Length: 235
Ligand SMILES: NC(=O)c1ccc[n+]([C@@H]2O[C@H](COP(=O)([O-])OP(=O)(O)OC[C@H]3O[C@@H](n4cnc5c(N)ncnc54)[C@H](OP(=O)(O)O)[C@@H]3O)[C@@H](O)[C@H]2O)c1
Image (cartoon, rainbow, N blue to C red; front, side, top):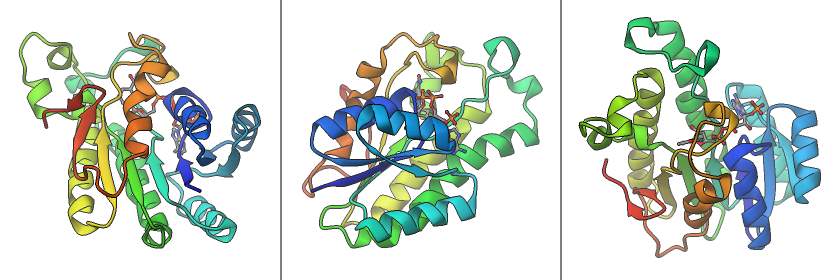
């Protein structure tokens, strides 16, 4: 029996990942920062719901306590994230990027991921086959954003790609520190969700593919890697 927590699973890629992992036999906790949105999603999915705001120490600690009391955790999917688009769904470019915007982005995408991982490490250590999947992005790839003529090159934002590049580094460092766990970063691809005002070109079914796959890696699977649905992704 595999128990899995997916943060920000009340909608989007997290919700679709929950649906697929439940179908694969996992006991899934839908993490949601809003109790009503979480309750409705969990009810539709046949999942458990845990209230968790990744930016809040007390909320994350309470979620860890609840899941520990229920029997522990095997798989953590750090999915909650923001892209922080401005008015009219426009990406904030370099000229308008402020320290405050960076702080807000990092609070969720980076500090939130570390806060949650740190709180759940004791539970993961007790699992026979612990797995962590970190939601990165293709925009975290230095190779990608410097490849002239590609959509990644053309993306004007600073804060979001920087936050996801930090996620990649965190993934590598955690993977080295905890060789008994499988810890990987994934790029789901440009997917139509609320995050990007539904401008993404993939469906959530397509986007969740690599998340679901990496959530199911066995103890002999890869760790410290960065993958999209077609395989290893260039850093
Ligand atoms: N869509 C893409 O094209 C794409 C591409 C690459 C990577 N990603 C990554 O994939 C992940 C999921 O994104 P998505 O596209 O599915 O976006 P989404 O539909 O906007 O879902 C984001 C989820 O994160 C939750 N969330 C945001 N801040 C939170 C917080 N402080 N605490 C707890 N939950 C929080 C949201 O909750 P609320 O409903 O309460 O807001 C929502 O459930 C993100 O990490 C994103 O960066 C997405």
